[in-house]
Image 1 (cartoon, one colour):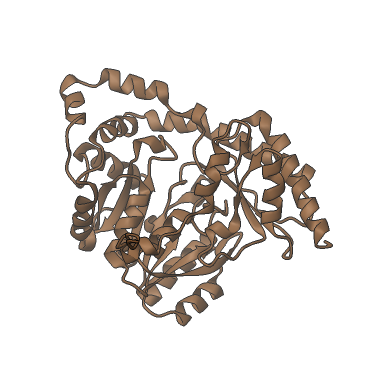
Image 2 (cartoon, rainbow, N blue to C red):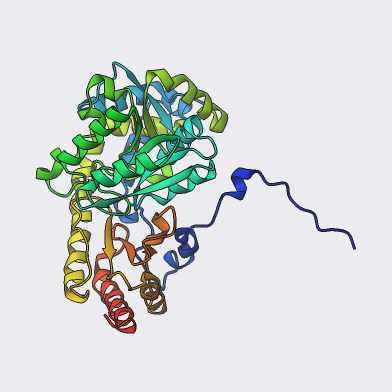
Length: 408
């Protein structure tokens, strides 16, 4: 008998693992399930009419250009439009430049390849975005989770994590409407992060996918990017990742990196090896969407819709969840993070929910070490409003059941 053929996988591939989100998507797309699993915009809120209008009104030569390859750095008019947009948020481009990416996750990949060697360390919030955690680990880096409270990273926890690890290459943070924790950093915590990276000569990767999705105008000032708050020297230590996925549509696969000029060329070479260029068609549409004022009108239309879903979820949580359950009321974004009493396993709640037609994502998925077993994420962005009360009631029943089994 001949020996079975063995594929010579790379070390990178051998360090990949399946995520709970991917495994749960079979339920999330099933019509018989109410899904709080996918952290995605609402299908019914996409700017379909605006995009049709934009494309219809484009000159013929620009339409033809949209079908062609483009520069690796991005469609020049879009790069300039992104710069102008980010300057309105207080970011200076004296020492930085814009690289268009195929989604923000590609941007995170570029930074990982730029900095990480096997056994290096990334400091990341606990919990953190599963896509970033998977990427960091695929480069065989150690990810050290740093606990948060409702205001962001806890200063003493961050100091301790930094001191105990070797070869810390950068800090990864999501300061606005965090995925999955739903919180927004306070002004004091933002200032602490800036002073911390300055004191320790540490690079910061600021992931700001949800910046525009605040629910109340009074909270808009809280969303100011850390890069905009930094002094000139500290700003050189900050890399900013933005995306059109949550404010335009993930199907366009467009994001951007704001990079210190000292690393821009190396980042461009990495991107060139990945895909040569991001889709020109998407970039041409996004340029007009951003430059001609479509985006702000669109955001004014969708913010109340996401706020409505947040309000309905919170209303149902107050009605159906035990008072022992902890959560932070999100001021924007797509997510509510649930913490159960310590000895209660969220997996038991999920099992009950699945049996009754509801799906969500376990908190351990957002941990580098599979901790946080008593937590889970509710993504309310892409659920129908008339299904929310029923779904939260079912989850609440599952929580009571799981608590009774451990005597809570």
